[in-house]
Length: 348
Image 1 (cartoon, one colour):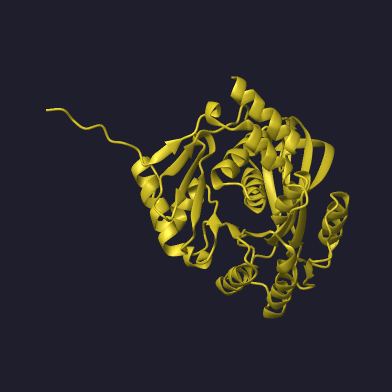
Image 2 (cartoon, rainbow, N blue to C red; image 1 turned 90 degrees about the horizontal axis):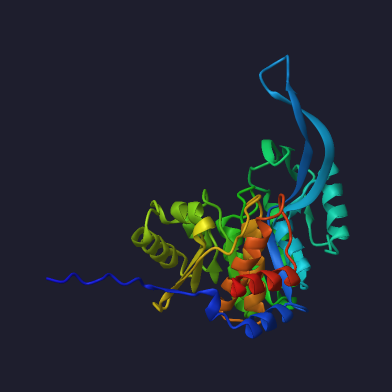
């Protein structure tokens, strides 16, 4: 008796199947688009040096500091990616009244991103993540942050900024890093504002947040760990991946779901029951995965804002992520780098 071969509900998309001209056109259409980015913001500080000996005071390495770098972090990194792709980000988040806030504003101005829409809460510390690195090895990360819920006054100020800016935007990206800003109430208001003005709200969720917080999102972009937490189950094979996707779509009522799977690429699900899409990773060299999810949602959001299909947007997002992980720390990707990556994979 012959056993029937089990068919996968996913379509695959190899580089040979890409329409390079159409994808290139999508990248060109990023210019002029405006994306509202809402979420926790912060500064990434990289302390770079060399380890030459162990401390006599404790069994820990001594790092001789050679360089310090400051970069935009969290939702500010998403905004930076949007700017690098030729579009205009409008960034809404919460900062304190401290040195970190000064660094944040300076970095935003350097990146040509308007800091005027940030809400200042003098009782909170501006998020700072410091990474101490020797050669290619990260030795330690130190987080300076307040993670308690923001005050009602601050949350209302953020909501007012969103309501004011949404009519001027082509889409909204909601970045939840569980630093106290995004609550179920605020998320619901942002989803309602998006519906009112006919723009999508894309969500990069947090694994410790209840999945119900994201009910009303247009589409979500969790990584595998986040998808497992949102679905309440482990993802160990294709069957469990499919079940996790089904659960998340059911609760959030999102139209689409994109699960980023690191070396395994991306899995795309649709709520209308149409076949999903499985795309392999396009990374050639992985140096640092920090910020890859920020790059993905920036590209997906711009693709949707530019009128591209989700399929084309995901291909471009996957290519962009492959470029980003080849760089140190949180980094941006340009349209030219995405085009080059596309050409390399199509000719391989």
